[in-house]
Length: 385
Image (cartoon, rainbow, N blue to C red; front, side, top):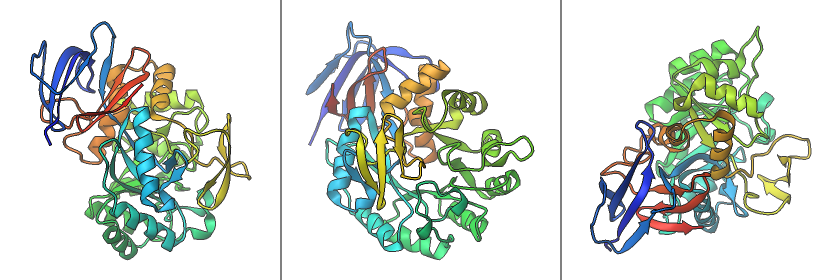
């Protein structure tokens, strides 16, 4: 069914050009025209006159386990729909459903569930799956249950990709574990992002992994061998490797504000991908919640297991963007890169992460304080403040 939208008098922001005032005409989920003073007749109108509204490509969250009381590992259709529906409130128009280290049966159940999922009109797009674990280091397990950590297997992963109907886009891997380097090479051949994480690798091992195809790092600083001046570890290697983009959880719980600033100085906006790593408690009250069969206590200090380990976050992408802006004073163009464009490039999404004619009409409309006013998915307003 035809659906047209005219957006007028907004400041349009992309990662690679100066912001400009303009209008957009959208038809059937695609940007047809961008110009000044468009007069095309549309079924729906948004006018930003006198509102100082800013239009950005919709946020893409490459690492999210859950929200609104639901989790990817619940392996139910209602869990995925509720997550996808809740995420639009924070400006997210696309996400990777992220699994965690669990039994093979539980992981396969979650993969099969995502394979069957189809988005409704009022939801963020499920862009694929991020498999976080079970191919990680027991030394850097964090909230990943150690009893389910196993060695990487290309044969098993091929089976998983079949179960998921080819929807696995990213795998977090500790390259130093037995078979890790061979597995990274196999991911490259399958066009799946190999992301180093939950790893105790030396800088030499990281360099080797990058040479073999690692192109991303999972939640920088967290559950990876830290920097030391005599052994720079995973953190040092990731900060220095230009080929590696790194996820950052900018909640100031997982990383000190100055550590976030350091990453921005070292990697630049083109090297950072803002993520939430959120769990089911996002958007809910403080209290106790389940994460992969473990009890997580959520308070103002974050989400923690009983042993004190951090267990994901309750961060929104809206707040991640505000925090990044506050601590680095980065430009709006750099915000676009870190919240959308870099993720779209990593995922090889040719028509997302940018506002241009022919691209998908996935946007977040912000006020001057970066508060989400509207979220638009596939050319339709799916959230209004």
